[in-house]
Amino acid sequence: MIELEGLERRFGDRVALEGITLDVPEGATLAVLGPNGAGKTTLLRVLAGLLRPHGGRVRVAGADLPRERWRIPARVGYLGHDALLYRELSGRENLSYHAELHGVDGDRVEELLAAVGMGRRADEPLRDLSRGMVQRLAVARAVLHDPPLLLLDEPRSHLDPGVGEALEPLIGRGSGRTRVLASHDVDGALDEADLALGLRGGRQAFAGVATAAQARELYR
Image (cartoon, rainbow, N blue to C red):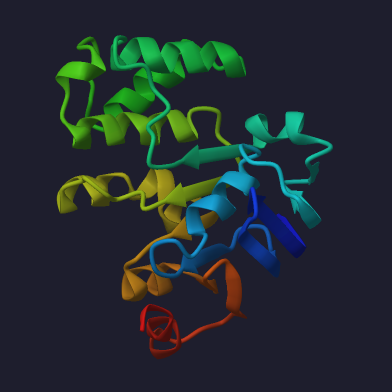
């Protein structure tokens, strides 16, 4: 599902990612670990087609980046720090808009509003909702088009524990999707993951099967 060989990404003269090489098979979960500034979010944004790679080979969900970036939106669900929703629109309006973009039936919108527990407040503008409620709607947006690959950047941030559990069928292991999960929760992420990528200063510290002790070294 994901093939990286020598991935590089820069911001001006600053190297954000360098020499990232790994393979993530279909159906697997990859945990991306590392301290703030390690390159976790940059990596997910490259995989989502939101940032252009500056070097190396990048293949995501059957698309070669950046040449075939146009194929990515239909195959990838991205849940980042920005909800990618319009604050002046309601949850239902936001999801309906994205449903039209992806050619998804309106019934799917209602199904997901119920699944994330936002059915009763679906017609309120996002500006009036709590951060946790907006995050629930962002989860619904990310899976709306049933993508085979999910890119999740701290997906449980701002969520109450009970709500996080309710979202497991959508973005958890039980979803059956290939997942890339960026997290500071070493133990939680490794429990969910089949593989791990450790980043420090934009460089790859390890890739493959990792222990919690090995991952904690990234933060020292």
